[in-house]
Image 1 (cartoon, helix red, strand yellow):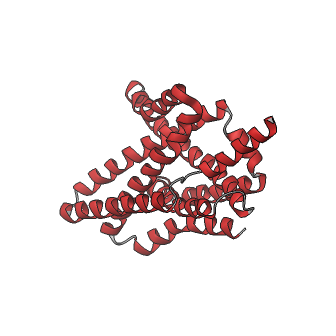
Image 2: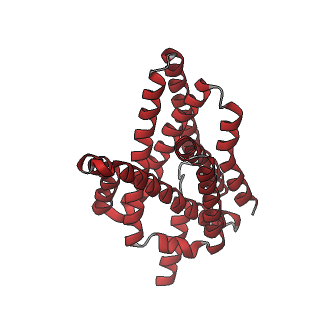
Image 3: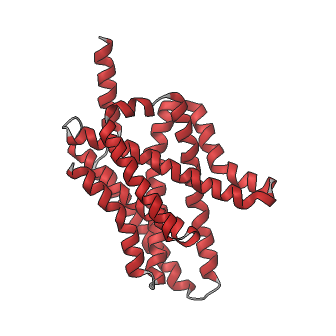
Length: 255
């Protein structure tokens, strides 16, 4: 249960940092770059390979649909571009909630010594950029209340995953669920890609470009370092340990 408590507390890092440093534009800019690189890297090198392994070529098509579909729909239906944008953000949030459920299930395995301890460490650590991303993306555009509710839902999703355990992981690998995960994975990448550009263009009109540019590089560098350290600390990062356990159970049952 200690793993779960730690995984819930780490989600609060985003609001705490934002509240304490909101007057420091350079630091906030660095945090944004950190979120983009670290969470984007985790999606590309952790979530995406699992989705493609389970869903194959069709899953790749769903990822591309989630990545480029929103931009295409905004161009085709300009009158409803705001709705398309909000829908994309909602899908990205849904993707984070799905991932929070699998986090909880994998933490159950680690807590019951059915998975490596480093699996729990990796899960807890990679939730920090996820929590930061929620606050960084939602707080400025939708307000504190919405961002807080989403973080609360992520905590609830984690607890659900923990209490349902490996049974839920079996359902999460079902083909139709994998395709849904592939689509929302593309949506997450879309949101991450477009939000920083909006932030950059906003700051561009207010001077201090050199300082903010340095902050972008520093934050991005720290995000890359975080990603590398996470992968080095646990080369089988993500939920491969949990997946291996499930595959072992299936083989055992087959015999």
